Length: 92
Image (tube, rainbow, N blue to C red; front, side, top):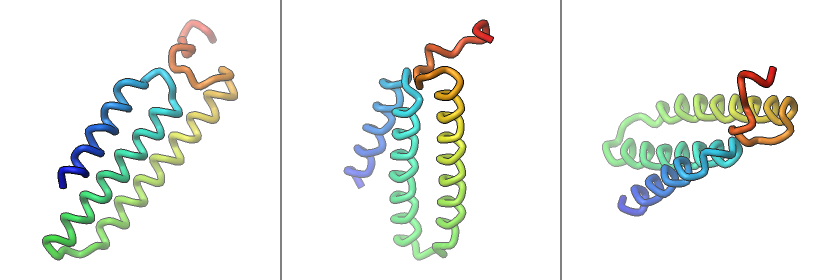
């Protein structure tokens, strides 16, 4: 359980420290989703609940990942890189 907590905290650290690049942020969000999935699975197995709830969690996490990749592709096509600092409202 401590190793799972350490994994989650390290994912949060990466998410907060590399906030300039969208791709690295998407990777760290997916890492956090996987850590939460493992924690959620362990809790459900420990208390012997129904595991069908995990399917809903996975569906929403896949939708979140595909939405993030779509935003990344559109941003690279329009601006040429994934740096969040290159986005500006005045550049239109």
